[in-house]
Amino acid sequence: MAEYNLTLPAMGESIAEATIIRWLKEEGDTIKKEEILVEIATDKVDSEIFSPVDGILKKILFSTNEVVRIGKSIAILETKDIIIENKNNIYVEEKKKRFYSPLVRYIAQKEGINFHELESIVGTGNKQRVTKKDILKYVRIKKTDNIFTFCKSVNNSFSSSSYNEEIIKMDRIRIITAKNMMYSKNTSAHVTSFVEADVTNVVKWREKMKDFFHKKTGEKLTLMSIFVECVVKAIKDLPMINISVSGSNIIKKKNINIGLATALPDGNLIVPVIKHADSYNLRELILIINDLIRRARSNQLKPNEIKGGTYTISNIGSFGNILGTPIINQPQVAIMAIGLIQKKLSVVETSDGDYIGIRHKIYLSHSYDHRVIDGILGGGFVKKVAFYLEKFNCYTKI
Image (cartoon, rainbow, N blue to C red; front, side, top):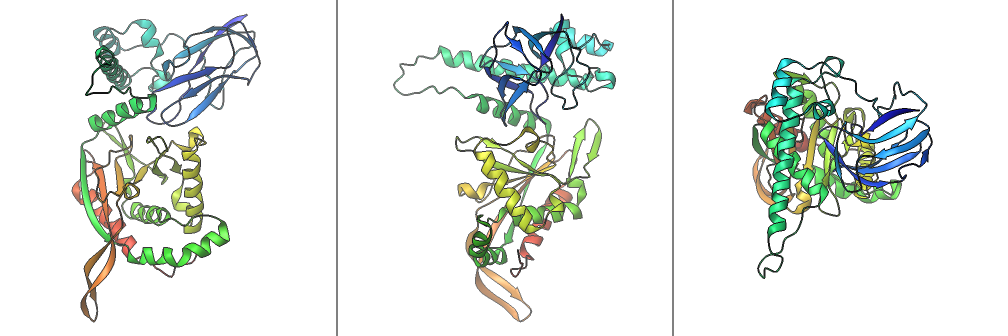
């Protein structure tokens, strides 16, 4: 019999760890290939990990409710089979000893990382070697974990008998979200530009079409599809907003994948992604968006539906907010917040002269990474989105 380490697979961009929810097998149990062994959860979705082989579950390395890093071994399987490759990238063969550069070894020694821990770090270099960037990222996340552990111990030291305070422990998703937000702020030089747009034509169109659309499709006609369509048009005009950063390199994305920051019933957020958003017409966007949001709120999204985003939109108007300074969803470089639509008295310019009218106005808040996006692009982009919103044809058919 041979032993193989079952490791925690990569679950998507910006996800560094997962929580063990429930083991479906006990140590010593016989297992079959593709049988579910364990249920896990991240701040994005819940998933299941299957056995890659027939055999025996020899040892469970992490218990229920423990947090595990991506790439860490979670169980030891005993089997006669040999795992060479899994095309779904769910099971990773046990790591062999890798070459480590003198710089990486120096950093590991300085940070107190032993060889076993070094072997657990996922490498992005040639032949999965650990690069300087890999180990520094690992150290940064590890230090963040230590801060949360310290805060937790301090919280536990407070007296629960205080009359004026109540101690509420962060849940798993809130802790992970907090770390992701701090990572983004520490990575990107955030700056935000604001533009007011006249969306009167958009509002009139929805009022005119919503009953017809619901009767025909059974779906609610929301305005998010139009915002997505206008953002896509602006990205086509200014493609350097659709990038990411890797060291001193700028990675220009060919695909336009729009993430939609979605509030969940428990108050947390998730970001489902519309892949190839530029390939759909308005009607298709409405149906896709409704489906993604509906399944996001019922925890039914698949892991590949929350990764690969290249630009994100957040609808803060649903909270009654008019302006915001959203935090960039790494490794993207920009995010737009859509504010509350308000009726306002405005000066309307026409070829026959100006007049005062009641118009529907909205603020667009655009946060971008000033390391690679200057004001002329970041501010110009949000202005371009406003331009397409204001030019929307209220006679559009769906």
